[in-house]
Amino acid sequence: MKKVLEIIKNNWLFAILLIIFIIFNFITFIYLGYDYSINSDDLSYINSGINFYETGKITMHGVVSAQIMPGLTFLIAFFCLIFGTGSVLLVALKLFYMLMTILTMIVLYKTARIFANKYISTFVCLFLLAPDYLWMSNLILTETPFMLLLLLLIYYSIKFIKENKNRDYIFIIIYYIICLFIRPTIVFFPVALIICLIIKKYNFKDLMKKVVVLALAVLTCLTPWIIRNYQIFEKFIPLTYGVGNPLLLGTYQGIGYPNDAELDYETNVDDLLSIEMQKVLSSDYPRDEYKVYYSLEYDRLKAFYRMQYWWDNDKASMLKSYLLYKPKIMLYSSFYWNEIFNIDIKVNLVFRIIDILLFGISSIVIFIKRKHLLEYLFLVILYGYHIIMYSYAFAYERYAIVLFPIRFIVIAIGLQLIFSSIYKTASKM
Image (cartoon, rainbow, N blue to C red; front, side, top):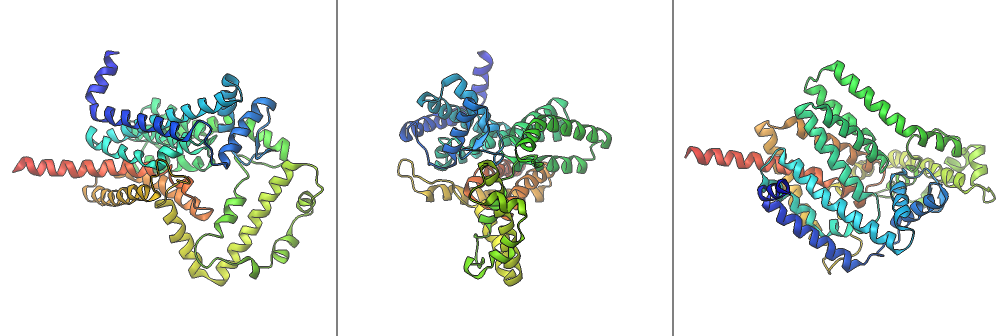
């Protein structure tokens, strides 16, 4: 108890902010109600967890599936085991999501404290008070757990880059695997870490050992999932098969994309389908799980045709869409479908403008001062590859909002460097 009080005393400003954040989260929960839903993927995830609890089958949208990673399904099923499948389940899940949101702020603060003083670290946590973050924590989606796990990965990765402790690497492995079971886009996370360790001239032999350990740990955990997918779909599906639909949706984003009326899908897609795919997609095929799988595969083929046609007929608009329009969504947007307390979406966008400006200034300062460049590179690679992946497929506010805390960490680094320079200058006067 004394240790806790000492921590609170030493971080009193953040403690005040955290209490305010907790209160805001509770008020939002009460305002929206325990059964609040956007009647979208959040309901599908809940139903998936309940179905797994009752039948042992991993489903999405009511069909046996590998469209999603099963992490959230497992989590919800575990809650079903304790709380049943009624209204108590929803209350428990919403409260747990609130807890994860609170932990996210704590982890963000701890990560910022690696580089900055407690006042600057508290300041960057203010960005999590944006209404869209409070609203999002009331939705049973992958965003809230993914954001927490991503920040934990970043925290232990930065510690490992700086201190090279095996304990931190073990936590990296654990959180990476859990994160992978929540959202597969994290799969390339180790690349960012490995690049930075190579630049740091980390012992190559030790690095290879750690890569092998990580690979074996991931393979061990994924093997049951891969075997299950092969048994059901007779295909090698190491993660998910759901990329076809977002890839297709992404060809309808931006400017100058092809209109369906000008395209010949029959000749360039339908006539090229395999006999197996044609058979499964026929209306009388009995296995719904195969239908969904091949339907998404069909979306993928359709997307590639649209992309090729777009490139052949209007390269300029395609480049603008994929290099400017879609990345802009990933950088400046708000996942906020319904207002809370009549707060307009413009409030969230003000938060975005401020943090983008501070991120830009901080990046310049980091390059000028040439301090923490390696950690900055790690964060930028991690952030950048997510933006590239989503911009290539489907740029969506839901995917963007969980990545913004990476910018908050960079802001903490930059503001600390600015503060230190001002303090040194003032000291000499």
